[in-house]
Length: 449
Image (cartoon, rainbow, N blue to C red; front, side, top):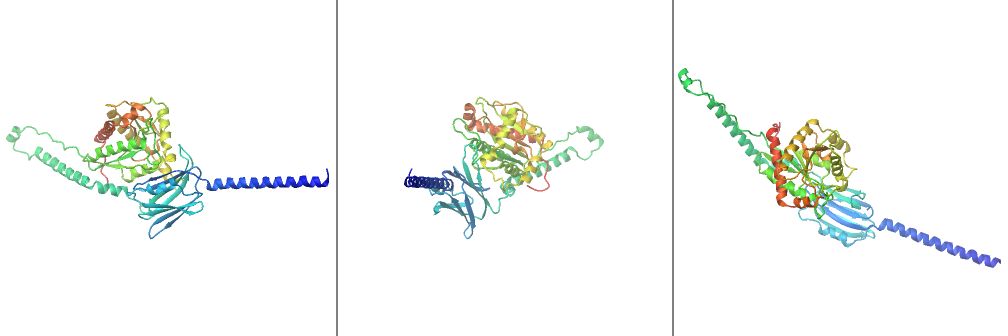
């Protein structure tokens, strides 16, 4: 081989290597662009509530964001990296509801190439929490914007305000009962007459005072799941979160018809409430009873019947009870909580303080409700089951979880969507509660609530 031929071959090799290097660099560049700027928005959702408003951006890759709070007027400005403005993002603007407590409108625009800016026009100052959730339960990556008010609402004050008239009426009724009782005692115990007259008067029986409650009984009603967490889904597409909210509202209305009771809903709309917050809410309003309402699913579609669960400190009462508890306790992962800001110490303390007395009372009220349900619907188990449900771990409030039926069973799914069945379930729960408190009236509190 001549030197000229050898030189020509080397030159050709260098060209090939250089071309390969360029191709590799270009491919690498494309990969980096895809990773950094190739995020695809899969959906946008808004969940308004009195507690907070949540905005969700779901994407196929995590979304890096930056945020800033502006005042006069109040705004939250969020820049999302790696996005091009598209119809899905623009749809976010139309999803803001007029009755949203905290967001008046959202403006969306292409701030820079590959940077979308979201501007939240606010109705009042907020404390935002922005965080990303990893894929779970059919969801891809979710960027959550939880917009909390700077001054949180006080549920107890709101409850007292709403029930002031009923509380006043109960107090007046108690005064009248006291007067009647005093009059009855005086009437049955007259001044001692002379001996001949005394012989003519038959011995009088003491008239018992009518039964009464010293104060309003507060029932915390917890509609399971909500918002990002649909709960179980039936074969006809029924979502547990909608069914149980409907039953919870029916129970609320029935309780409000009672002169000696008042109700408190842990959620009154389609939004998510973390499990420990549900417990904290019940404690904040000094509830006398916590009732969590569900309509769960099981791996076998023939499973049927209503159930009532109480807390267990010594393991589940059955394999199915353990399975149910594990499934319900996973709601926080699906619904979405900000682990970084959660006060773990307080949460753990709350969940470890449950008492034997609480569990005993829970079993009593649970059995009362089961007895009422059995009058018109099949039971999955004839006694209250027990497992370590996180939502039942209030240390000082009797707490039960009612599985109204199996939404995974087609026949029971149909019943759960029937107004008559929902009403009968709510009525049965009410009667069970009334039976329990007739035997275990609440003691008077030191302060009005």
